[in-house]
Image (cartoon, rainbow, N blue to C red; front, side):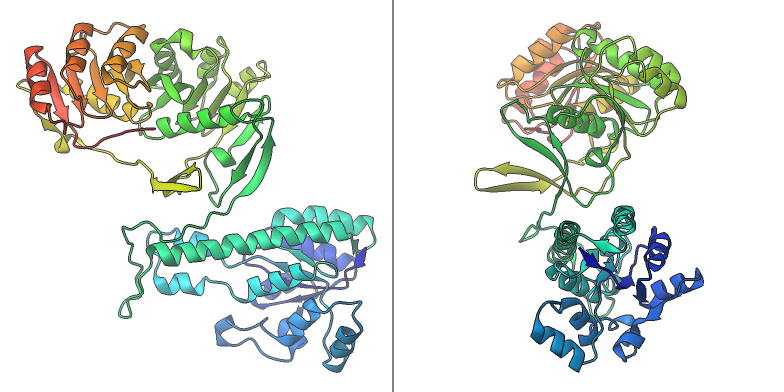
Length: 521
């Protein structure tokens, strides 16, 4: 155990710092602080010693230099049991610092702003903070380093239980987290500089490049262990990156432990529904939608989505892009589902779900921050932009003799969005606001057409069809026409496009080409 007698506090994120500093002071721990942190603590009535009093040197350069001083780092890095260190500390009138409480300038939040300037980004690169964190973490045998507000309570409890002392195990754990913090911070800065920044001397504006980064640094922290991976013989865990929202950061309100496959399907559900601005619901099985619909409210959206394929919906994952109401929860409660994700839930809905103890109820918000889709292959990574491709009606090329009706056009746009979330080769049958059938993951596109029709539980007559890639032959159109479709949306680009268009005209189908493909492998 080590007694904490002096703590240096310098934080950008001041969450919980008043309470924590007051607890430190209750153990007669001297508080040394900097700038705005010192002013805040002093205003709250705490006794605070300015860093300039400890160093004998003023803060300079607008605060760029305040803790970069031998009396700061000597007090942190000196090994207490080293005779030479103790002698040099005494000779240079250095005072020991037993705890460093530091979090860093908000670089990642700053550069995430659409209007950030290079000057603003650079000024949010913390220098003194990482230096103190690294010094304290290196000397964890003698110094505790605290980098996250969510550690304050546990440290306060340990200090209270041990008369102002902290264990070596705690200091070691804090050091590990400290180096994780600086690694993530430096990775964010390096990624920003490599990926998106040219300094223009005249304007200092950030200029976004189109190229992928030449180096990619990924930092992720284990959020929780999972029982197993896709199969019981595979180990698995959930890791979180810097994003504050999304499925990895979702709050579990009730239900069994999440599995690897649950999380994969929750991501698929959330990605699909957040592609719609209207009230949307989808039901996912094995990453593919077996139901999807828009509705006037969440209950209607759910009932229409379930009607797509009630048999396959059993045991599925539900996604909503609107808060779940009590009425929707009543409709959901009649069928077994593994999990549900939504931005929020009415109290009545949560009351209803409590009777289904195994249902995993997840609450999250759209993150929108992930720029890349990253896949592991043996020996490396594949990196691509997220598929956020959208197309409006003005960009569609109507190549058929018959123009689509307004209703068909709305159905085609809906089907095109759904198609993006179906494994290739992907075929989607839909009506306006409702998925009718999907053919997913087949090696032959015409087989996907057949399977999508075979899976349909609702009438196919009058539906439209979406294909994630071009039709290599006319057989897919011929099969879909037998099912009763009236319009098709597809990328085009096949060497047999003319043959496919002729087939559409023979069946009196309207056909729109997007010029955009939506493969999902």
